Image (cartoon, rainbow, N blue to C red; front, side, top):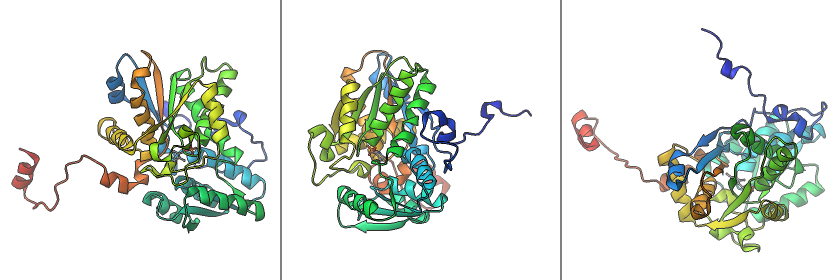
Length: 359
Ligand SMILES: *Cc1c(COP(=O)(O)O)cnc(C)c1O
């Protein structure tokens, strides 16, 4: 047997992989869980539904170490915080930021304080924050309120804010665009992405612009951002006081990166649209049943949005949908929203089981 040369060197994590493109120096201690290098998976069933030679891919960022793209930003934010001698970090979170902040902060030997909206964080995410050793503060209020509080606390006390207002977060997150260009040999025609605080759409655009300016890609993609209809401040161009949606990761009424996102929309000739919770769930089930991909509901908003824009897609286009988080994050949503056949309480009898199977 010879060595499998396809796997010749281990992935070092995204800071080492893209060091030249990131604001780090020799003095920066790199706090990594080897995040990044996530797969770009062809979505065959969805491509054939659209037809006309259109190729759709999923950038499955739910395969990062804590199960969401937040790890791309957190490796940078925590490494820089460590470099600056910080001993504690804080964030407001709908769940994934807290899981990621806790994992990286604890790995760096720091305290991690997380403020969450009581009752609106998916079980898997809360479980992670607890196991990663975060100090969890659940408030009676939504994400937007939690963010207001942590911003104030970070100004008054010696704790570093690691929400997407932290510029290092977006720097790390932009590397997903690099990976897409490397996998396709060029930027795609469209990016479809869910938006909450709209940090990620802004980060992707930074990445696409950087590679375009360096001549590594020949085009810039059109950026299509999607929000849930009950939580669509960027689509409605307003603030939503009481955002509502099954997709808790994007249940945000006052996005902190609003200005940046509007610039991305304009520069990329893009669009912001809303999708209903039902459309999100339909796409969520479709990804599971026909593509074998289990993502969280917020992530499925990208595919729901794409299907909604089906008639505007040019023939032979290449489209990438960003699947931001792993389906295991939100088991309640999965149990309550599926078309599975589930027979329980069966006798352990071969004939009866075969009969139930339809034989
Ligand atoms: C954070 C998050 C989003 C929203 O990203 P923003 O940068 O806030 O727009 C979408 N999906 C998942 C799974 C997330 O964790």
